[in-house]
Image (cartoon, rainbow, N blue to C red; front, side):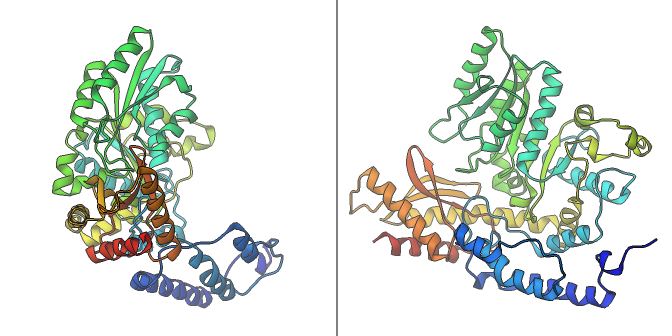
Length: 474
């Protein structure tokens, strides 16, 4: 018995070659010419429904016609997060080698869950994980980690592990501490884990948006006096809003004294460890129990790729290992790591390949220079704005993020007027599609925020965008 030819979902070898060559040409062309394109896509739900809404077709359509439609209608309707003028959120600079590596991993449909399914894939994840452990000063023999879909899943994995190690099965009295600048994914993770709102301590930050150490100590002492059980402090190594790094050394000392789990969310800023300036700012990160870092941000990888590092790999396997009967034959020995035992996912794509191939191709030195360039670019932007009579730096350049607002000395505008004006500037810049520059709120003020982690962004890209902002301010 065999299926009908049309039910095999196959193309001939020549058809596959022709189709594949077209796609590679399109991707290479995009990487080579994206600077000439607009980074912003703007559309309403009604417009998108008009373009795409249809019933699933019963009959086939020529593969090239489908590809033509995607290139004409779908791709132009997406923001270009790797564009040199995409300054908002956390851009995804990516790189061509890693994009092609992802194509290989998907094309060969590699299952990277267990050693028996793909020994080489598991080994590359071990190797690249060891590279990261060394970068962050974690023990390579004892330490471990896992690649995830992103920082949200990495933070969830870290906090589930922390709860298991510190609380066991009963976490009804447990309390966790994070700052008001911590990423929202952490709050989501804590709630998903079943913690009640009253078990979460949001500690106010100081005037530099750093974790308030005295307030943290007071909160821990108060909870202990009330019979509660503090178990974890979550610090940030590069907040999304301002790039601020919490006082990691001091927080590490508190965790050691109080016997608390020390988790550092470095999803954004962790990669700054590669730069000489970033390494100084991240002093103390090597004392953490766990670290989240997102290679698809400042390690220049395509989506999706997050990472969790832990000081002891047994913490992960002790938290997530399950032994269903159908996996009995693939357990292997202790050295043959099954990464489905180190996290939540059983089915996992081969994320390590793109990290491995890009580091091998370009060399770690190139990544170090790219990270330091981004830090220097933000400093240059800071200096440029401070020379202006129309711009005010609200939060100085930190780990390639800077916050500023239009506030001309001559106009003497009220805070309400300034908020409205800066919101209008952002809206018009985005609507122009020439750059992506949105606002955030700091100290109650609406401000413009630039995240400058694209190594292909130039100072002229920045100053041209600032001049565009000024043209919309009048």
